[in-house]
Amino acid sequence: VLFATTTTPLGHESTPGYQRESGRYRWAFPPAMDIVTCDISSKPVRTSLVTDIEHYLAEGSWSPDGRHVLYCSLKSGGGDIYVTDTESGKTHLLVGDEGYDGGPFFSPDGKRIVYRSDRRGNDLLQLYVADLVIDEYGAILGISREHQLTDNVHVNWGPFWHPNGRFIIYTTS
Image (tube, rainbow, N blue to C red; front, side, top):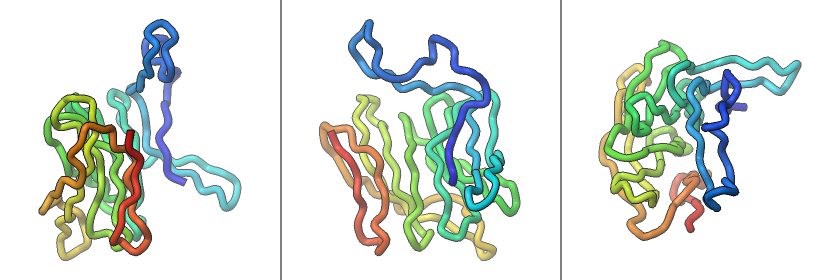
């Protein structure tokens, strides 16, 4: 299982969820979030894959071959998509455009990614797909041929590939 978790307790100012005072939902971006894995087939053991004690890391996913981990980091201040190669330990920025980029998932063949972005800064998330640039050793170096899939006045959330790689399912407001 791959997931993100805080490594320190949340402070009152970071409390996520419905805020009774304002009547709005608040998404928290606490620092010290790690991308971790837990093998649940035997005695559960949690292992940190990507750590950053100063910045939020979350929304991770595995490549189909298990070599790479995609995730969102607030290291730059705005939310960008990074990839870590678990064989070499190297990390690369993949999507670093203006606005929040997050929720990345690999296509079933491992050659593309789908993600959401708030590039217009209007709190509406649009969906994007991009091809991965992969070297002759199988390491992911970047993206190419980025395509915007949605362009509407909705929050488009949780994009995920159909197993055949031809369709994407997502939630929208």
